[in-house]
Structures are given as C-alpha cells and as structure tokens.
Length: 423
Ligand SMILES: *[C@@H]1O[C@H](CO)[C@@H](O)[C@H](O)[C@H]1NC(C)=O
Ligand SMILES: *[C@@H]1O[C@H](CO)[C@@H](O)[C@H](O)[C@H]1NC(C)=O
Ligand SMILES: *[C@@H]1O[C@H](CO)[C@@H](O)[C@H](O)[C@H]1NC(C)=O
Ligand SMILES: *[C@@H]1O[C@H](CO)[C@@H](O)[C@H](O)[C@H]1NC(C)=O
Picture 1 (cartoon, helix red, strand yellow):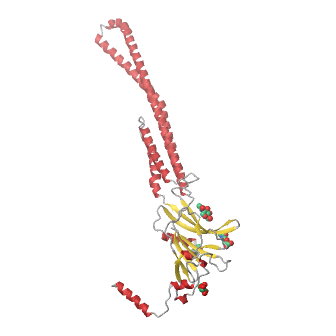
Picture 2 (cartoon, helix red, strand yellow; picture 1 turned 120 degrees about the vertical axis):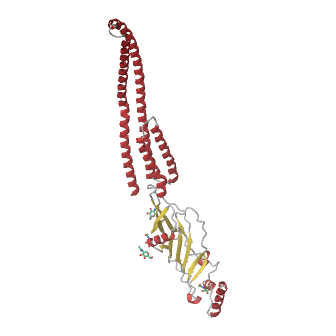
Picture 3 (cartoon, helix red, strand yellow; picture 1 turned 90 degrees about the vertical axis):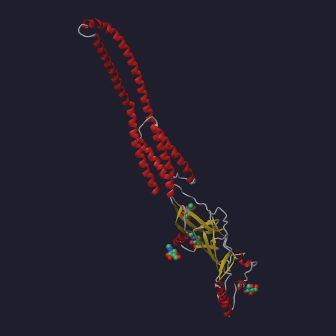
C-alpha cells in the first residue's frame, strides 16, 4: 500500500513539472566526455602546462584515502543543466594522480571504488578504502610497554613538485580526531595520534613532494603482564620463599629445580610473543635472563650448601665409626684390664672377702663398666658436636649471606627495570 502511494507521488510530480528535463548524459555530452576521448585521459588536465595540479588528500585510519584535485578541462554551468553540480563517472575516463604508498608491501586486493565524483567547477573527488600492509620499523626495547610510530608516505611516482603538489586536506589534530571516531575496536593497540608532515624528496635535481602520515600507537600491555611478567615474579618469590624450607637431604634442591624448569617453559613462551626484529636488547629479555640467572645462582648455592651438609654428615658418620672402633678397642682393653684387674683384685677380694659378699663386688664391677661406657659416649657426643659446628656452621652462614644478597639484588633489579620500563 505504501509502495503504491509512493509511485503515484512520483508520477504526479513528474507530470506537474513543465520544466526542462536534464540528464547526466547531457552534461557528459556537453563535455565531450566519451570513453574513447583521449583528451581527458592522456595528459595531466591543465590548459597551460605551467600550471601545477593541486592534489588534496586525506588519510583516516584504516586507510581511507580521499583524494581531490582539479581538472581544468572540465567545467559547466549548473544553471544550464537544471542545477546539476555533480556527476559520477568511471575512473578510467579521466586522468588520475599516480599516488602510491612507499611502505606498502602487499598488493591491495580489496575491491576498488570504480567511480569518481566530478564537480561543475572541475574538482574531482575520489575516495577509496585501501588496506595497507606496510613495513614499519618497530622498536621493541620496552616491550610490552612500547609505543610504536609507523609512517605511511604518499607520493607521486613521476610528477615533480612543480607539476603536482600534494596537500593534506585536514591538519594533524583533525585527522587524529577523525581517526579516533572511526575506530571502534582497537585490539592490542591503542591509537594515540596521526600527524602529517610534508617532505620534499630530492633526486637528480628533481624534487618530489611527499606526505608522511605518522601513526602513533601504544600497545596494551595487560595480556603480556598477566601471561608472562607476573608468573615469572611468582616463581621468583617461590624461589625466595624456599629459603625457609628445612634443609633435609635435597628436598630444597628438588623444589628449586622444579621452579627453574617452570621458568624455562615461560621462556619458551617469550620466544613466541617477542617480535624478533630489534637492535637493542629488549628489556623483557634482560628481565628474564637476570631472573633466570639469579635463580640458577640460588640453585647452585643450594647445591653447595647441600654438599657441605652431606660432607658434614659423612664426617659425622666416619667419626661414629671411628668411635665405635675405639669403643671396641676400649671394650677389648676393658676386657683385658678386667682380666688383669681380676688377677690383681683377687687377693684384695680375698682379703675383703670376709667383709663384702662376692655378689656385691660383681655389681660394683658392672656399675664401673657402665660408667666407663657412659664416659666414652659422652666423649663421642662432645666431639661430634664440635664437628657439626665446623661444616654445618659454614653452610648456615653461606645460606644466610646468600639470602640477604638475593633479596637485595632482586629488589634492586626489579626497581631499576620497572623505572626503565616506565620512562
Ligand atoms: C565538444 O565538441 C564540439 C564539437 O566537436 C565542440 O563544438 C565543443 O566546443 C566541445 N565542447 C567542449 C566543452 O569542449
Ligand atoms: C617517519 O617520518 C618522520 C618524519 O619525516 C621521520 O623523522 C621518522 O624517522 C620516520 N620514521 C620511520 C620509522 O621511518
Ligand atoms: C585544524 O583544522 C581545524 C578545522 O579544520 C581548525 O579548527 C583547527 O584550528 C586546526 N588546527 C591547527 C593546529 O591548525
Ligand atoms: C617543497 O617544495 C615546494 C616547491 O618548491 C615548496 O613550496 C614547499 O614548501 C617545499 N616543502 C618543504 C617541506 O620543503
């Protein structure tokens, strides 16, 4: 129903107007613009060759190229053609500036806009979406807290500066604002600004005018911080905490090796996420290497301490063995002495036989023996303790000194590297 009413309305207005009817073709005919008319295609559209063609262009992020220039051969009076001020013609029909992007490394295969707008005063406008895959020298020193600047340089291949001038149609602040509005999702990168500079490129006494669009963007570091920097810090604190694990025969050693292995796995991830092109060592690599080295050092220290402890317990074992042998000797001696004593004691015993019972004397001898044994054990114990003091004492000392060194180095290093990352 709505549709029909709409059609009727058109018929009505058409019928009511008795004005002159014009079509775009009238304009095209007037201009003598035909596909085989080489006047419009072959040469730069100036009537006097000394005129230069002003090409205004605009790049918005996502590379929308808006180019505008003047064709001196084209002009008509809109009043003659019912007020037609614009026609659109296929791009092949008219001359177009030969702009190209220096940094582009891949042929743009996105669909081209086949038409251009021609204005009555000869201004020709054409807009195009260009997908630019460009080279950009990246500085990953501060990865993942880095800011990158990439240039897109636009210039003409053959037209020199006196034939063709390139002018930016909007200034840097406006282009930045436009691009911000255009960008909905920015992915890993946060767009900061777009600045435009003009530059004359000289070669063989000829000058070409280039426009350089510099995109500044900042990486969003959160993902890398969560995925990489924090886990390494966690493992480092685990390694620090392992100081408080009691030194029982390699338990600590096993723990530290496990933590070191975990860090190695994280280093493999780094290999994937770090862009490989860089002259300066990226800070993140320094971060990893130094933390890895510190943990390695701590592992080595634990090995040393474990070795000292082991040596200590071995010497203790040896001592015990020796003491056992000595004890055996003493026992033997005791046995021999007992024999002699028995011989010596016999007459005395006989003498005291009258006053002391033989059973009582036997008990006394037993007590004496017990006392002797007690004395040797005490001796052994005493010597043993002295020995523990020597090796084990060193181990404890080294442990404590290393812990202090470790904590100081780690806090100093982390402070330094975060300051460096921040500036
Ligand atoms: C178009 O061609 C005709 C005849 O060839 C000529 O008279 C006319 O001036 C031309 N129009 C323009 C705009 O050059
Ligand atoms: C980008 O262009 C500016 C201005 O000419 C220049 O200073 C800078 O070195 C260029 N950057 C790169 C990465 O080429
Ligand atoms: C940039 O252009 C806008 C309008 O196009 C203008 O208002 C603004 O002042 C210009 N900024 C500078 C720095 O020239
Ligand atoms: C480039 O050369 C043109 C013409 O000589 C001049 O007007 C323009 O200022 C120059 N641009 C720069 C950036 O030097």
